Amino acid sequence: KQFTGKVALVTGASSGIGKATALQYAREGAKVVVSDIKEDEGLKVVEEIKQSGGEAVFVAADVAKPEDCENLVKQAVAHYGQLNIAFNNAGIGGEAKPIGEMDVESWNRVIAVNLSSVFYCMHYQVKQMLQNGGGAIVNNSSILGQVGFANSAAYVAAKHGVVGLTKNGALEYAAKGIRVNLVGPAFIKTPLLTEAGMENETLQMLAQLHPIGRLGEAEEVAELVIWLSSDKASFVTGAYYAVDGAYLAQ
Ligand code: NAD
Image 1: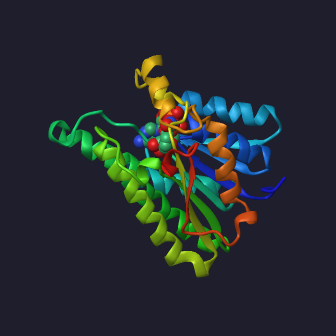
Image 2: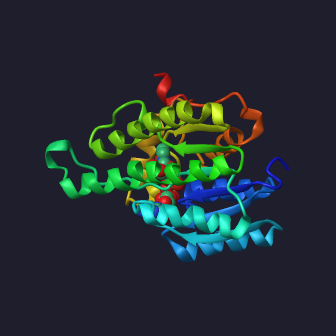
């Protein structure tokens, strides 16, 4: 078990990619801080981890609020004494409209939840990790951190922003023992897609955008996050890793 003795924090861990990653961190021996705005679902993830012999605690946090991100790190340390790994994953899709019709509030919300949140989280995480002799941060961007997608300007801008934030984090903390990397998933079959009211037909159409011919699974993203979080990736920092069925290769 590669994370024995380590403490891993996951935002947006009640569902989808965050949940799959929290379960894998626990399987690899980490004590996991499961965080989300959805408390009931988060407590279920904690229960699932405990039932398979792992250790986890739920801490509610709205990552759009800096004070929640600060408290999240404080709670991680209060429970487990340190913080070694963080997966900044919480995010929302936002409304599907072209720029001329996108509400300003809708823009602000997506930027707050998908971009400013990553700054808030990293701000408190790095300070703690420095006290623990280093750490690994993985931020969840998207293929849409590299290319555009019509009717998703706020999402695309936020995900591109996360790429820049990650590069800066890597530069500023590389010599201090903190690695900061990005995963860039293509369309993954999670509630983000299915609960956005997408019909089967739309999902099929999205699947066809991937040369591999299907959507990804949350576990397939989690595998990459696990590797980037581990000592096996000790020389990897400031990097964007696509997990996208060749979407970006086109
Ligand atoms: P999901 O909806 O299954 O999970 C997202 C989780 O984030 C939910 O549990 C939700 O409650 C939580 N969340 C939302 N707003 C929050 C807030 N303000 N504070 C704290 N938690 C909040 O979706 P997912 O597909 O697992 O998405 C996870 C991440 O992956 C997101 O950042 C998303 O942009 C990114 N991503 C998803 C896809 C995809 O196709 N599903 C592709 C690329 C990137």
